[in-house]
Length: 100
Image 1 (cartoon, rainbow, N blue to C red):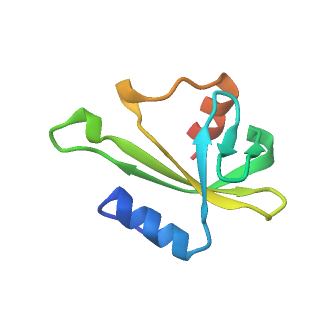
Image 2: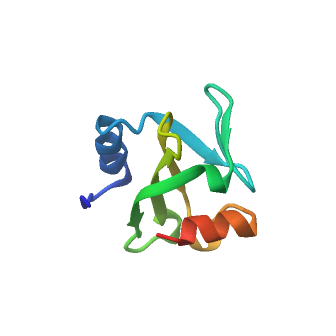
């Protein structure tokens, strides 16, 4: 797996690898708002995880997930803060995202 210095660098590299959809966490699923596609935790795999920690500012903590639908038709990324700025998500999503 590649290592990146910034979130922007990770997103650019993943897009070049075909991870073109922008997913958002919506409590118990991920959603691509551009085309209203939605995937439940059992419908996608996390293929890469990249964590970024701010040296002095906790608000700089972020994680980038590369995700792919199990049927191989959708590839995209999720960016999310972690720690005290993390989104509210379901137990199933916590388990899915913690697997990597």
